[in-house]
Structures are given as structure tokens and as C-alpha cells.
Image (tube, rainbow, N blue to C red; front, side, top):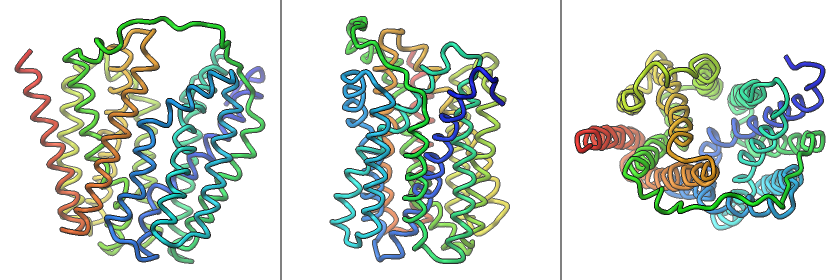
Length: 384
């Protein structure tokens, strides 16, 4: 898989992604199941999980500053993963909403650093090696599939009490693997180019892109928080839920590895419109026909379009809309506004909707958000 020259660099990164994303494969789909088992309502669940998403608005800027200050991204990554592991360990001994709120807040601060820092280390490490980024990053997708499937079986056999120990265990192994990652020091004496970034983000095309990305992550929020609970309420067992979520990630891997040239074959506007159109269908079907295994499989197949394809389009748009000297700031703006604020607002809103109207109308609201995004996209093209 990796050449002899690159193995000592590539395999430790592959292993870190595997166990880091294995933790995500337990945490994101199943924490709502755990919170329900200890008596938390939908509003409380949405608020707690939104902390993890909302942290990406501000926290990554702190970690970026710390990394540049130290010049050692591996050291910063180790601080973050150890901190996240300690917070996950503390969750095993907390039962009140207020206790979870504080622990989740600090967990979110550490967690928000893991993806950007590991990506930074990976891209810097393979710069002079003949190793594609996707070949290392796919370790994370494999880890996610492994963990989400295993957790489904464990929950079915032993109940939701296995969720937090599993999260803690995967993070603990990620801590160990981080010590084998090859360090790539940053030259802190290099000065970055300056320019008027504020004027750039006032560009009409940038504004519309960020707004559409905001709505995409808002529409996915009910899925990220309540999909496992919704399927359980519809009669699916824990292992079936795990397999369905794993299937969605499998088709996502296919898109990432084999359909990366979509942008050269299709108009970006048409691709974005297709993503939101599939979103309307996906969320509507989940809302009202979740008890059908074939419908559930089909909606998970659509994950490769509503999430994976839109994500690839977004990365391409960031590279196109933001010049090289503003690429990092453009990525931070996308992460903070779309993923952080859009996903966070969506999670909080989904929590309230779940308590007030139930799962069917919560996912229907996601479909309505996708319709709104389609309308905005059409209007943006007509006014050009």
C-alpha cells in the first residue's frame, strides 16, 4: 500500500486516522442514544452535541495560533488528543445535564483541533513522497465503518452503557499512535502574504457559496444527531442501525476515491442543485418511511451525493474563490460559518423540533431547508 521510502511516515498517520475516526464512528451516531438512555430529552441532546459543532467557529483559530507559536504541529496534535481523551474519560463519571455541558464544552475545544491538525501534518509529511492524501485519509473511513458497525452490535448486546467506554478506548489508542507520527516542524520565521480578506468575503459569489454551505450542514444536523434514535424508534435493532450508517460511509469512500473528476465534467451549479434535490428526497423519505429497510438503504445511498459530493464541490470552490495567500483563511471561514454555525444551529433547532413535533417533522424540516437552498441557488443564477 505504501512504498518502503514512505512507510515510516504514512502508516502512523493512517493508524491515527483509523482510531480517531473510529471514535467519531461511535460518538456522533450513538451519543444521542446514550443521552436518551440516561433521561435527557431532545432539546438537551441537541444542545450538548451542538457544542462540538459550534466549537469549530472559534477554537481552530486558537489551535492554529498555538501551532504557529510552537512550530510543532505534532506536539499541538498530542495536546489536543490527550485533552479529548481525558474529557471523554470524565464523561464516564458524569450523569447530570450541567455536568455534561461543562465536560462537553472542554471536549469540544480539544476535539475541534484534531481534524485540521492531523490534515496539516499529513499534507506536510507527504509533500515530497509519492503518496496520495486520500490513501492515508481512507484509514479514517475504514475506522469509522469498523467502529460504527461494532458499536451497533455491542449496543444491541449490552445496551447504551458501552458507548462512552468505547469512545474513551478509541481515543486512548489514538493518543498512543500519535507518538509514532513523524514530526514536520513549521518555519515560524516565514511571513504570510497580506491582503484585504474582508473585501474578498464580500464578493457576491463567495457570500452565496457560504450561505448554501451553511444550509447544507443545517439540513444534515437532524441526521447527525437523531438518525440512530429515529431508526431505533422505527423498529431497527442496534446492529442494523450500525450497518446502515456504515453503508453510507462505504458509498462515501467510493465517491472520494473514484469520482474526484466530477468538476471537470459537470457544471458546479448543476452539481450543487443535484445535491440539494437529493437532500429533499433523502430527508423526506427518512421522515415518513424510516420503517422500510429498502427506503433506509436508499437514503443512505444518497449520502454519497448530499454529503460527499457537496463536500468535494465545496473544497473545489474554496480553492477557486480564495487565492493562495487566503486559502487557509477561506477554509477557516468555511469550517466556522458552514460546519460550525450551520451545523450547530441545525442541531439546537433539531433538538427543539424533536421534543415539540417528533422525528418525522424534524426530518421534514431538513427537507424544507434543502428546498430553501434550491430556491436561493436558482435566484442567485437569475440575478447574475
